[in-house]
Image 1 (cartoon, helix red, strand yellow):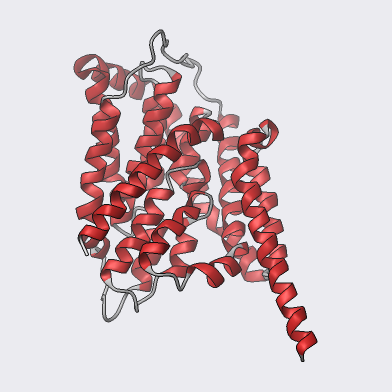
Image 2: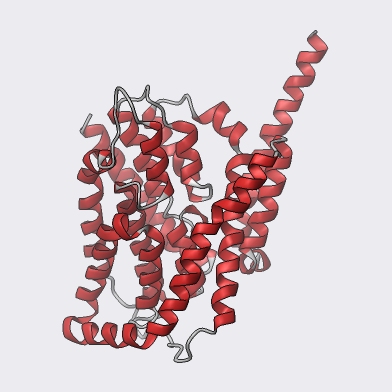
Length: 356
């Protein structure tokens, strides 16, 4: 009996230790290995397979989910990419005209705030695709474009959570909170989170509008040739692999979530949920949220997930789409996204504590 318990504990320690090791690799290798950074989808796919294997959670349901889950996102990216290829010249002319009329600062504010506010209606995916197309035309340096892209993806990620249409996190949260005591309906998250999200979107817009170009910086080179049809299909395929990898990672890390995360106090969970910077926040929402939580606990949980999701490329679908479309590397994203995300996490933590 004692020997069996020791063996079980040993096996448990092996699983948890192995998963933490995989998590460390996912966090660090994209910044220290150029090859990993260039082939991030394949790397995450391999890490996902390893994490599920360590957890011994392989089954037909997971395989079906992993193969089916990315299809909607991939089709949306593919169809929008083909459509934007046809409308490319009109989008470019409209963007240039707006830039000439309002200037960069005002236009950037409109982009960040506008896409953040409507992402819950048009979906985070479409908002990210529009963002990528517009940023490709704006007369900004590459460094400034990266900053605007990161800020905009924070805005889109926050705004999309206000309705179940916007992103999977919101859909899952609503489905888990239906019935008493919360009786979550279509506008449940809007009623509970908009007081935090909408002001945050406007603050992000103001911040982006006042970004300063570095002295001597030159506008990023613009690609006049339209993207090839093969290129659009290849990008959609890479996004399919990316999302599939996130499904595997989310499932593989289930033992860690169940052992250390689920039963934490809300204010601790808020900070622990920074793991959504590398894990699918919809998966974390499904694992963590429950009817037994108070409205305040739900606010802590969801705001932590939403903010942290913008810090690194794997944290959100908009990040993935923009990074692929604008060729933003993991290191470039993190250098701006992590400090901004930490500042937002700290600010909202104070706000959420004060609002208790």
